[in-house]
Length: 259
Image (cartoon, rainbow, N blue to C red; front, top):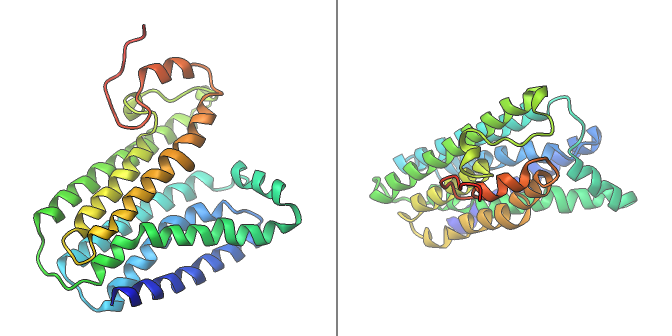
């Protein structure tokens, strides 16, 4: 069953990301892929739930958690990006790609995101394709961890959103709230969420193999698209050296005193 669910989910994601690509191509804005990201996970969660016709507590739990996360993340990005130009990351990509932009956009931006959704969302498919009934200690610990991550991500994004809305803060670094204890509370929260999801998956067959999900998202955020890009931006702002010396880069920790 799990192999069939993975194959069908992959096919569904192909059509979903292809549709998003068409919209982005028409609007000339590849930033749409960021909004599509969260909803892609929600899509395979609900698909796998109804595809298997097994509505146990764990299936409902993971589907609800993923839906809350997806609406929060994609909704936030939609509000933040509304009325703005294409993200500079994608604009720079287009400059380098030239006339091959549509082809590269389709495969490198949209299809790659679809593959990553399938890999990171693998524990969702594992959980929803299982028939193990009853919640275990792993389910409760995983859910508690998910809540911690969700709060970090949500509160961190909200605090930053309010900070950036104030014109007086333009060019300044956010050093208050959760940002006082970690330079990237939103990315930290994101990784914690997926480690929580994996713990829930440990209660079902193939759950151990689902560790590929939190490992992948943690690696991406720490070394590829999350922290490195954000750090390069922060380095251009006044006061970064002081902020860097006092505040943990990722895992929240006590503020260090300036030497």
